[in-house]
Every structure is written in structure tokens, then in C-alpha cells.
Image (cartoon, rainbow, N blue to C red; front, side, top):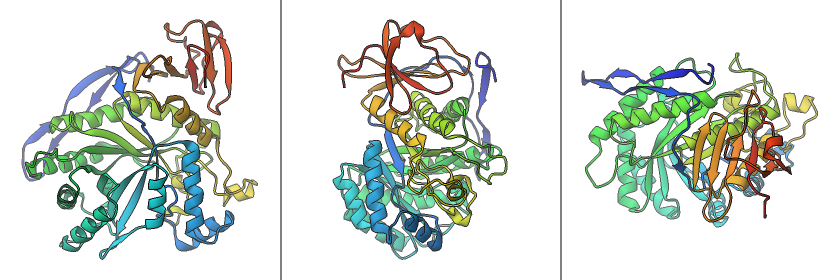
Length: 449
């Protein structure tokens, strides 16, 4: 759609299960190219699941480790921790899987993450596609888990019930049981709702998923005890997709804010995106997946994160640093191509790409963190034009791109310092700078660091 057109953002009119009442979210029009209000941010950048091999068959995991010259998980965890430090993110999300008797965890690695100064978001999830009818054992073991890691102060209850649960309507029961444990065991901890798979590669329409989450949020708000705490402190959205998603990202986040607002939980709820990614190369699944270059993946990372932050998302996380291999036993899946580092297997081995080779997106993320992590505010000036502001006398950093050689914002004048996605810097005059599809970081005075 042309940027100057207005798009109606229509959320759902949903019949709530068992209630018969209708919940009308809202109908609003937004100019896709309009500016947005300033949004506060604090150390927003993270990584999902570094150093873990979730979802990989044992044989595939061994093969992946062997290509890196490793014979066990421990050196892979140490290697991954080094990558996390190199990118410069401030937090990671790690899954704790409940197998029906206890939680699977890597205590030594978790302590290494903590000692490295990283905040860990712990996701308590279940191995099966349903929660046990009797949650006694889960609650007992979850309480022990929380006490074992007193430095983990954010606990997420479950993951993606709208696509991974056999009966998503049972999720509120599971969530409320977990919420009770967190509130009773750790008075300073925050509780996150399970990640909402709002956009994923094989998705045709998100209307059913919004309906499922409307029901989930409605039920949790209705049944959460009046204990002085909100029903949940953090809402987590998951967004997977392809290059040039800026408009859809903004619309999806607005729609989600509307869903939360209609249930009265938007204002006091922190909005995170703990999983998002796009690919380089040519996945076999989904069949309509386009081939994408490293340049496109790198550009999309910066564009997507910048757009998300401008629309009120406080924390964003890429999934994952290292490419999977045969994720869910499928070598051609989207999720095998979405990492920031090549695994050197399959098509990559045939092309001579070695395991551990960093993609351009790795360096783009590193540059984004270095240039903007200290910002306290981000504002969308127009599509493809975003301003990060800082405390003190530091000049704003503008993240800019355009498919049509658009003019710079009027407030950028005189000599500027331009940093590309690979971190290479040059100085020029604002009037001599032309924008292209690859984002650049522009500062109104020469850098001092």
C-alpha cells in the first residue's frame, strides 16, 4: 500500500466463549506515514535461547556441535555466551521445560549468564501440548525452581498457547496456577503472559489467533485474584516474517494494544517481543518463503526492532543467535535459516560456508546495540525515519532508510556522522546524504567515542 494512504486497523468483534457477551475492541484509522509520540526505552535489546538446543533431534544436535569442533553442550554454551557478550545485549530468554516430574535446566550455564551481568527471563513451559489436569507437581517444582534462582526476577508462564496447545482455552488455568506460585514465592518478581504467536511464517490470517488471545486475556482478567497486582505484568508478542514488514509490524502491535486496552490491562502492562526473526537464504518451508539475501536479513533486523520500539514495545529479542539444524526434525524450515550465524550444514556446506560464520545481521545487531542501547526515548518521525534520544548533551541518533530516496528529516542539517549496518563510519554534509533501502545511523555531530 502507498505510504500516504490511510489503513483501517480493524480489531475483532468476538463472542466470548460461554458468556454470550460481545467484546468490541475498536476501529481506528492510522496514516501509515504519520509520526508517533515519543516512547521511553531502557536497555531494550536481547536474544532468545542462546546456548540451547531446544527442538533439535539428538542426532542433529550432535552433528551441529561436531561442525564447531565441540563434543558436548558445555563448550557450546560457553561459545554462545561469548557471542551474547559480543553483540552487547542486556538480557536473554531461556526456556525451563517441565516434563511432568521436574524442570529441565542447565544450572551451571544459567549462573554463567547471571555472572556475566545478563538479565535472564525464565519461561516455565510444558513438554506436552497440554497442561496436566492435576497441577500439584508442577506447582511444587515451579516453586523450587523460583527459589533456586532468586536472581531471575521475570517469570513467564507457558509459551504460544494459540499455536502449540491442543486446547488453548485451558491455558488460563495453567497461567493462574503459575502466577500464584510467582506471587507467593518472590514478592519482587514480575509475571509474563505466554508469548502470543501473532505472526509466524505459515500463517494465513491472524484473526483466529487474536480471537484465541482475546478469550485468554478475558478469562485471566476475570479470574485473577484481587491481590494488589495486575493480572500479568508483561505481555509478550512473537513476530516472525520476511523482509519489508515495517507497516505490518506497526499494525500488529497497534492491534495488540487494542486487545489489551479493551480488557483494561494495557496501561499497566509492559510490552515485550521476546521472539522475532527473518531468514537469509531459501527455506523450503513455508513453500511461499522468498529467497532473502544477508543484506535483507540485516536490514530487516534493524528496521523491525526500530519500528517495534517506536510503537511502545519496551524490550526486543532476536531468535536465535545460532542457526538451528533440523529444527523439529525439518532441515528446510524457516527456523533453520533465521539465526545470525551459519551452522555450515546442508545447503551451506555445499556452498562452502563454514560453521560459525557470522552473517551481516550479526554485525547489524551489534551496530544497533552500540549506537542506540543507551537511548531513553525513540520516536517515529515517518516511515523509515526514527529518532533515538539520549540523556545529557549527546546528539540524537537517527535510523533512516527509504526505498524512494526520501529526503532527510528537516531537523538534520550541517555535518553528520553516518554509520552503516556493519559499523563503518563516514562524515558528510546532510545535504549530500541520500537514503536507500539499507538503514543507516545518522548523528548530527562527529562521534566522540
